[in-house]
Length: 250
Ligand SMILES: NC(=O)c1ccc[n+]([C@@H]2O[C@H](COP(=O)([O-])OP(=O)(O)OC[C@H]3O[C@@H](n4cnc5c(N)ncnc54)[C@H](O)[C@@H]3O)[C@@H](O)[C@H]2O)c1
Image (cartoon, rainbow, N blue to C red; front, side, top):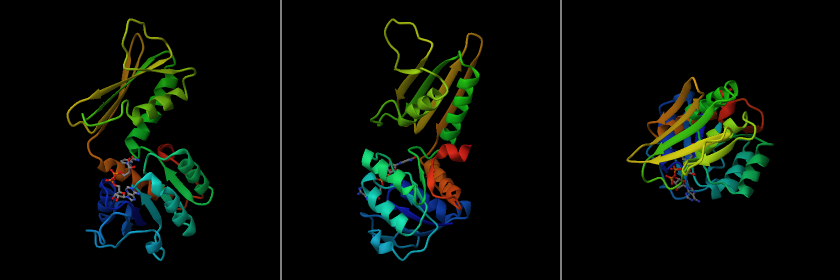
């Protein structure tokens, strides 16, 4: 699997490049593209400044960890080369989301704001638990380092949204406070910020007689790069369409 990385000079791009050079999932690195990168990468492959500069490159898949504003040019390039693409960049606006959906009618597109296979699995397990125990109370606790700006994390919301698909009329309560009893359909979501925690997500499912705790711990950002390479391998031989982590887990 010959990979092009868009955003190769960034933190995530470098992680993916390392995995591709190590041959994860039979992969190899063909080149990188990075608008603000240096001329050549430390991986012995060229780094192009623009998609146009890379137009003659042959590859099997593009992995994108760059900036959402690059999305129109990225998709145009991939469609013109009939190249499957893993869009791992986040922060797309409505117009860019539409472009991704449109591109997926022409080429295989994998799009996920969280490329962790473990988190995708946690979503599925949490859904199964919520469905199997319809009367149980459900609370989500997420922990991250003290530099994180947003709370709760996008992943905590992703988990709550997944659980909501099997819980009619569920609603979210963020960081419980006050003097009010918990309601049956609540999903409590709690954010903890301390030290250097990379990312922890815990889903607690409890009845009067038992408690189940499902927990995912991220040790390093490399897990997102691993997920992106797995997603790239997943796209191989797939028809045009929009794919996400849940498709890998299923
Ligand atoms: N899906 C996931 O699981 C996941 C995980 C981590 C990060 N991300 C997302 O991946 C993206 C990259 O993350 P990162 O930590 O590697 O960022 P980064 O800033 O370290 O790297 C981004 C790279 O993209 C390049 N780039 C190209 N065009 C750009 C433009 N117009 N503006 C800004 N940069 C441009 C930069 O030069 C840089 O090398 C972000 O959107 C981030 O939120 C997604």
